[in-house]
Image (cartoon, rainbow, N blue to C red; front, side, top):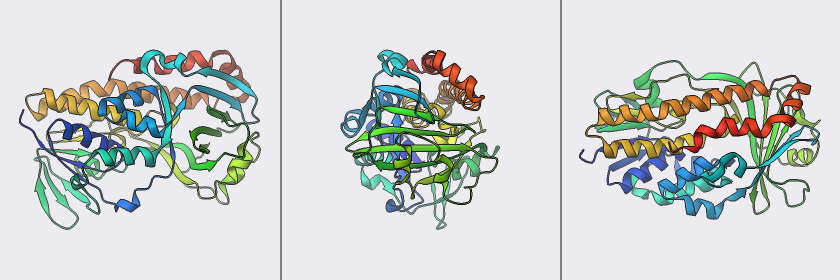
Length: 367
């Protein structure tokens, strides 16, 4: 198949990863992003499970990401007071797939931006419509034609809404706050540690190195809006380092969590990747991993197929079962977090490592 002219809508992690792989294979690539470059600061941490790290190696940026990242060797589960529930080496979950890492979203995006020529990316450029023949209309009224348009523009994807229709993302009944704190003077912060409270509350810490720790807190909620007052008051009964970390969380990034219910990701000259295709709960920490795998698989199918239609069909065939597995496991884990507290503690103390192994087992295979 002749090298295609490809437009990638969205300069986030999924869009930049795809641009890097396609450029390396000789495709003609444009990337457009509706926000200004200085509006893309992501300001939060990112846990990269082993299949995400493997995908970064396949994309060609794994070594550079690893230089900036902190290895994650163990996972610990605690109750909200800090009492142990379970602890295990991540190698026991992932085997020979590779290491797990923690980094910041900013660092990962910076590595990808550096790997993609700056002339490829156009900021402050919004797509308003995409047609089945690959014609794209921009906010300033200009149009252009592409062999393939890729929606990598997140959960509120303009490409999906313009061309795919389907149901809007579904609110998962969870709210979260994310921030990065200084942990140099706070004892007791090690590894990946999830603290599970009553009423569906969790507080996760992941060390990022250089005296930084990524903090993630979430609660159940019937509505997708931040509660009145200071959100940190919802976690005042948590023990250990949580109170001291919360003192640094006044500017935390808030989000209501949604899941995509659209299972159609391809049209004759368009395809969705990353959150535009399959946003889901962060319970499995697989959002970034699935986006990175999307980039590799789509590049593979476009390189190998004789035409775009065949390539996109192969992409969806390869990706759909794997994504469906992650969605299923997310649902199971989100249900488990809402078990009665005594039952949840008993289950995690007896079977946490076995459950984590089962959750991730199919992801050991290449995508």
